[in-house]
Figure 1: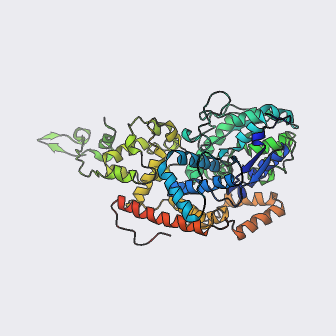
Figure 2: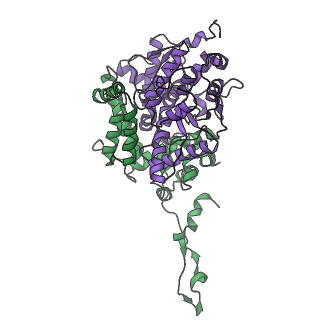
Figure 3: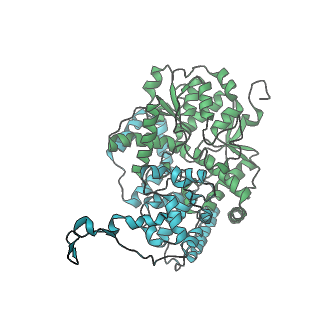
Length: 313
Length: 250
């Protein structure tokens, strides 16, 4: 917080890695992340000619290939002159972090990535040069809770929110060395960055015990019944906690929750009414952006009536 | 009782004669109940080594059976038969036939990494589940699971173009698993969304589906990864004492 604007110079301008999902089903997340950045006076510079991080699926075929794919994106960030890359998707964020960790700690992985990079004609990324942050870290570090509170134009007051972080943001612990470092750092056991930001925007966070439970996103299509049961658990618990909205921070969790909410109603006959919104959509509306500007109409879970009733959007 | 002996009291091991007279004594029904004795002769002493040779299985030898993995497991909570601790135990003992009883559910691990988070010995049980599912498939004990098919379709697209286009991914997956994309709740959901979306965005999404997003200059990376995958396949089959693959799967 060095400058007068209250914006940390380190995070005013960062490299942006949207990832594949944000160009498809997660488009609303992409749109609202960029809109929030703009409203806060932050610059996002998209990585040039990026590729898929490898996701869970390439890791299942071979973890070293996933590291190669993720490392190429880190190398692009470095070549563009950035020390920080921001990835809003939990999967991408997790994979870039994992690539950084594996390259720094596992000689066999480094050897394979260097061999693949040489064959591919790429410069092999060297660990320690680029740090990966999540959209939550980005807003929290760049603006801070106080800075955000000062910029709120349309408080989320009265909106009860269950904050849902999912699996990939905190597990496994060893790939997130900056977490669990005492006061001010993120907790892998009870994450709170999203809670903090939304509370600063005026929302009332409910006590939600399933913040880091699994939505079954990995098998959302290949084992739908398991995914529906896991999602239903998240939805009914959020409702039991009194939440109007589940705030998400991952396109896979988000679309999984939306799809399986509809599937649960049809297949298991359990109807739930809680709405699902990206945390960036909620922050954007608190900053005075319209519901349309943050892509609320692009969500499968139609929250427009609820938001209108609360004077948002 | 050692954990694997629970199989001895499975219902099929309990023998009971409805009508039985022994030495002139009527022992019909409950009086004749006994547990069938069982001798294990099918230890596969290479099983732990083989699974450790596949990606994810490397650290299985560290396990000291504390049970933190099963205790924290997402899938175990909805299906008690899904028991990573037990499977690790069986693999390390080489009890292949016992493991095969659960062969059709091991792939259902959702990779939430709660086990890996909880494990005090850094066994990385999530990786062990993936390695075990691979092992079952390579050994011919199971056909490729839906999750494996999804991994292959997904990775195939990443290897080919550098990016994922979700519409094509779903069509590819449903085509290979023979499912229909037209379940009515799904159609209604998409129709509801399309009604809300502005024309400009719809046109953009349609264009993306036709154009296929791709990373430029991907050819050399594709070749490098294809060579690596082929090399690893040879290494894995050799580690499992399998003959070289005659043909590549799609």
